[in-house]
Image (cartoon, rainbow, N blue to C red; front, side, top):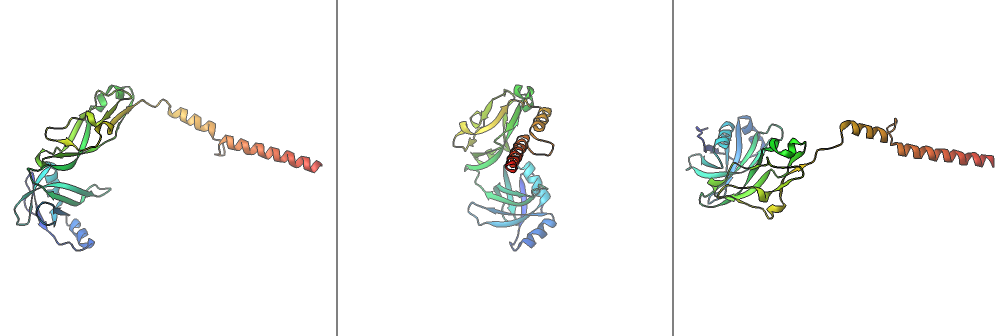
Amino acid sequence: MAENDSGSLDVQPREVTNSRATRRLRREGLVPGIVYGGDGEPVPFAVDARDLRLALAHGGAVIDLKVGHEKAAPVVVKDQHKHPVKGNILHLDLLRVRLDQAIQATVILELTGAEDAPGAKEGGVLEHVTREVVIEALPNDIPDSIVHDVSGMEINDTVTLAAVTVPDGVTLVVDDPEETVVATLTPPRLETEDEGIEEETELVGEDGEPIAAADAEAEGATAGDAEGGDSEGE
C-alpha cells in the first residue's frame, strides 16, 4: 500500500467476488470497503489495516481518499463494521462529500466531571443515557466528539440535550432536545447486601420453596388428613 499521511488515505480498487476472497483480504492485513455518493459510482476498495487506523486516528472528520491512480477526493466515514469481540474493523463505508455543503453525521457525546459532581460524591449513581448524537455541519466543522460537563449535578438531577452546547457551525438534529435525556443522577441504594440476603432467607425455606407456599401445602395436607380420618370414622 502507498505511504499514508495524516488526513489522507491511499487505497486500491478491488473486485467484489465472494466471502472467501474477502476473508483472504483480511488474513493479508487488508480491510475491504466501499466509497459512494457524490457524482461518482460506488467503488469497492481494499486498504491496509494499519494505514486505516492512522487515518482514522489523525485525519479528523474529513479524509482525503485516493483510489488507485485517481485524484484524491474528500470523504467521511459513513459506517464501520467491527468484530464483536476483537473490535477491529471488518468493513468500511466512505461517503464522498463537498466541503461547501453541510452533511449529517453521528458523533460521540462525552461527559466530563462526573467524579466531581456533588451528587456522585454523596453516593449517587450517574447514568450516561445518550451516548451519540446526530449533528449537521460542513464536513470540516464536524467534531470528533461533543463534550458536556456534569460536575454540577446533584442527586435527582436530569440533564437533557437542551443543556448541551455544541461548537459553532454545528446543529443538533433532534425533534425535542428538552425530552432527550443525556444523564441522570439517582439516589444511592439504601438496601445493603446483607439485608438482601436476610430478606431472601426469610422468604425461602430450607427446601428452596417459598415458605408461604410450603405452609399452604402443609395446611392443605393437614386438612386432608383430618377429612380422611373423619370419613374412616364414619
